[in-house]
Image 1 (cartoon, rainbow, N blue to C red):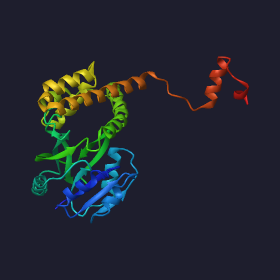
Image 2 (spheres, rainbow, N blue to C red):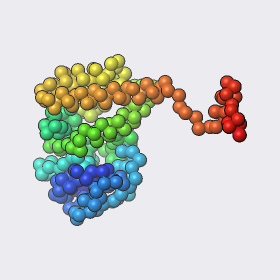
Image 3 (cartoon, rainbow, N blue to C red):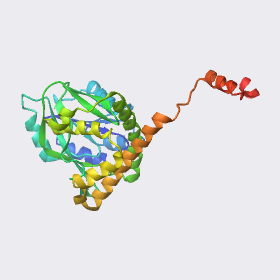
Image 4 (cartoon, helix red, strand yellow):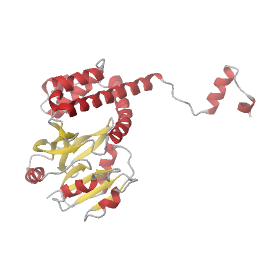
Length: 296
């Protein structure tokens, strides 16, 4: 048996279905980022643990959760509220935790959008670290999301989990990705200025995770990135085969990339307002603009 953590923030629409899918485990912990809706009220109806902790970042929230809320079992699985555990995945997890050579497993998501599995343009199978031995994996921040730090060998599971990425409507998706784009812009600027492309992983990476991360680092340096991403997703990956939902998905991702580029431009070119009043007064004095109110 393994424990299941569920991360939430204003998830009243999804939380009940998520918890019920996870009830195959006898230890479920909801870690809520101080929701303002009925998430905690709904979660508290179930025989599970519910803990609240103010959100700082995705990596820090996961690390705090793992260090501060001990699970009943040595192995744990991380779910987000718009994802679901399946009986098939749970059974494979039960088998995998007994393998002596690995401390963690990556699991692929199936993005569900407009009531359809977006198989092609989402780079399926796209893996996330979800099942691991407690104390062997921590997380750091990367852009708007997180990256795992593993203390041992890892592997991959065959079963997947559904991810209802737009279950709370397009308004919520746009609001969330507007926030995400700010963090991505900071990471993009940092990577361009200080990072580099790992060509070995890009060309000869042993796993999908290594190749995908190297490809992202390369994509940050390409001109016309939003347009290139649309062409890559819709034609090269086959998003056109995902029908109307595929076209909508690729368009939204293109908009997201463009938003990141705009915020990168802002960070590079727009001045940062100074809160130092002495500096402001000095600048006004230099230009002969000090008023009587300023002097007072």
